[in-house]
Amino acid sequence: MMSDNRGKLLKRFYNLHRKNLSLKIIKVSLAYLIVSVMWNFIFQLMNLPYSRADLPTLLLSVLVLLFIVAVNRFYGISPMVLKHVVLSYIMFVVCCLYFASGYKEAWTFFLMIPLISALYGKLQTMLIYSGIGLLLMMLVSAYYPLYDHMIFDSIDISNRLLIYLIIATISYILLEQLIRLYHNQVNIILESTDSTIEQVVKSFIVSIEAKDAYTFGHSERVSRYAVELAKLLPEFQQKGRLKSMRLAGLLHDIGKINIPESVLSKPDKLTDEEYELVKTHPVIGGRMVEKISSLDSLKDGVLYHHERWDGRGYPSGLAGEEIPLDARILAMADAFDAMTSSRAYREALPVSEAFKRIREGRGTQFDPNLVDCLDVLQVAWLRIHKQSQNEMQEFETMTDLF
Image (tube, rainbow, N blue to C red; front, side, top):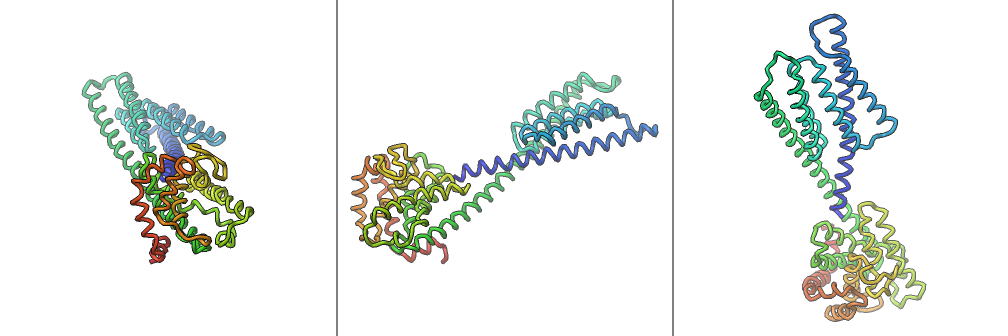
């Protein structure tokens, strides 16, 4: 879940960054071009020897930019397309300035291309546009040296190439720093969000389970059992998947908030109507978590944790591998904790009996591949069960009040 959220958040950051950067480049370019046009126009109007610029070329650059602004304003160019439009325009302006500036160092305008392309924070973008800019610089320098009396030889080419590569390298360092900054920001946000979500989830679960003293701590234990089982599976080797499994375990019974306390703690056998009411809690829980963007990936585990391998479970009667893996793991962890915990209507079963019944449910109630992990898993589950016997310690662990 964290990995998915991280990708989404980074994508959102980059899109916002691209859009804002493109708009700022457009504004700055327009301001500088207008000032340049006015500056050179006044000098030429007053016949002062301070300008060699070609005003028509500068005006053409302004008109093209105004056209881009108008199209973006009325039609709304996407951030990705706008980025390429702006960078293509920068190369166009650089070529215009090369021919219109009227001074021998005009080739240095090309050095802006790697710098500006690096600001977008994408290595591929920088490499492509820096490469195109380098080719343009060498071509116009070789075929249009501006002054016929100037000597332009291989030394000039190598020097310009060297300076361009130095600027491109500096731009790459700038790009890496920008990427690292974004990744650090995203990590800080996600870590803070994960911590907040887990604390809120724990507080919520405590308030629900406090309605029934017999099931207090059930969600925390199921979560721990589920994580230990998930650790043995190749699908859960990523840290983010285990975090999702932990939260799914904590929230698997959240739908019981809709069940009356009199039903949850009833010491006698439930009536058919009461049982049907209890069976609605996975659906309600699934609807609750899917409405929270940071928890919507937990829906499968919450919704289907009462399905059975043989298709006789609820709420959808899924069978075999139709049942999401998260739900199959939770089903086994949930059943183990239910059997080894005291309830209003019965005493807890011995741990050995619970393990026996899970093995008996192989291929009927539980995923046979998961049951086969029980020999390796047994030690970890016994440790968790033993730790959970101290109710005060469990309460402190869940609420972090002490």
